[in-house]
Image (tube, rainbow, N blue to C red; front, side, top):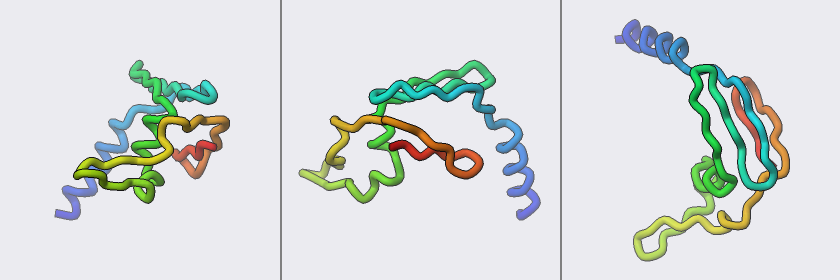
Length: 89
């Protein structure tokens, strides 16, 4: 079983697309392009809502999850963190 998991991990790492470009469009969005041609334009609001850091800001109102402070968020700068992370300010 451990060998099977190791092989899956190797395939996942080999199949993961490589980042080709990353451009910041302050304060509203980030554009990401991968070597396989796939591109994304990610809004500051989207990144705020789906960030793991947003978990502490989630509230439940009537059964719906609500994240406060997401609409008026902006990205002013971005710094690399480790091998693959990005810290937005």
